Length: 90
Image 1 (cartoon, rainbow, N blue to C red):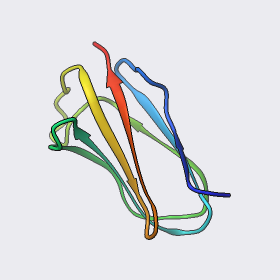
Image 2 (image 1 turned 45 degrees about the vertical axis):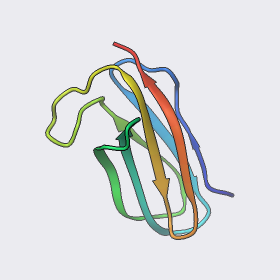
Image 3 (image 1 turned 180 degrees about the vertical axis):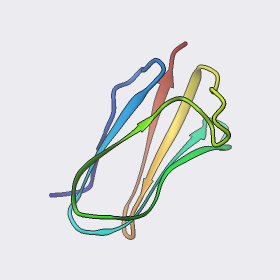
Image 4 (image 1 turned 90 degrees about the vertical axis):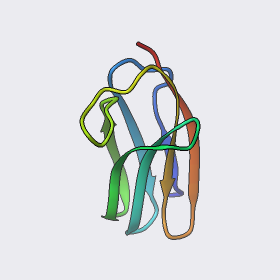
């Protein structure tokens, strides 16, 4: 199994980020604005190997809804980094 990430795009209100890990390890999944400003951290810690999913509800760290637009999610592990764009439509 290799590190993979998938999500529905564009989305409205919620999106599910699905990912698979070939081995246990530290994982960080964060959402940034297209200008590079951190919006929210969804996962930051140890995750077991296998398939997982996490939901982003379109809110920032303070629980406030973000505006529609283009966002970037980043999935980082000890040895890999994936960046993908996603469009929040309101």
